[in-house]
Length: 198
Image 1 (spheres, one colour):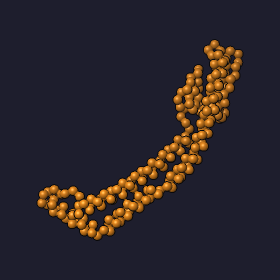
Image 2 (tube, helix red, strand yellow):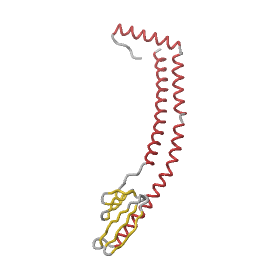
Image 3 (tube, one colour):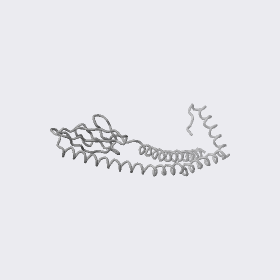
Image 4 (cartoon, one colour):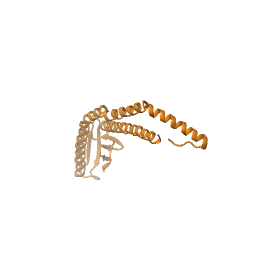
């Protein structure tokens, strides 16, 4: 009898574990795709510092001018040399305009122009990066819809568990044997003060 009970418990435990594993796999896949979608929709942080040039700090996804952060995407950058100062003109789509002076005594026009080229290239890189991210959103949403709808493994495991429980609950021989075993365990406990394990 004890062996039969152990087999029954093992079968039920295995079915319960299969349900837990199937639910965990389902939830893991769905939550992973939801997190990716959320990240793709979010505005990127400024990212790593790539270069400092005067009052400017060029980061991976932003330009910081005297502490003011401007996202790189769609910045329009140009040079305006005047007398003994070269101005870097930075225009945002809002349209916000910043003029950053670079005095000739401290900066050569070539060095400012070189930074302007690097900044313009960084704007292009950022624009392509954001386009790729935007293009990825529908792919992730489609994968998420498929993952949410794909409950076959979970449903199969749950159905198997229900079948195991129903079969075991309907087994009259098992129920009678279990009742006899419980009575024997209770009697043993009366005699010894110790109840045998299941």
